[in-house]
Image (cartoon, rainbow, N blue to C red; front, side, top):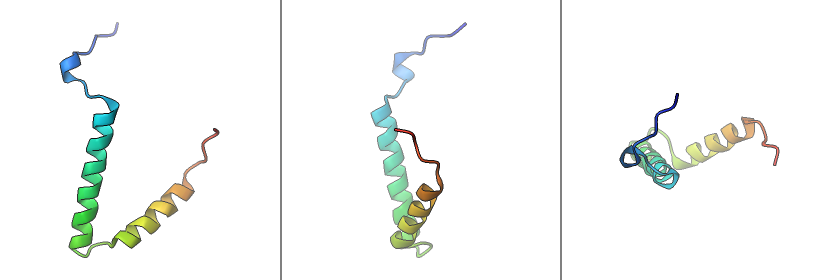
Length: 58
C-alpha cells in the first residue's frame, strides 16, 4: 500500500535541478580557486565521461 506524500515536504523538479546546478557551480569554483583542478580540465573530463555513456535511443 502506498502513502500519499505531504505536498509541503515535496520539491518540484525545477527546484531540485537548480539546487544541483548551484552546488556543482560552487564546487567547481572552489576547486578551481584552490588550484586543485582547472575549469578546462573539468570540461575535458565531462566530455570524456559523456562520451563513455551509452547513447540514448531518441
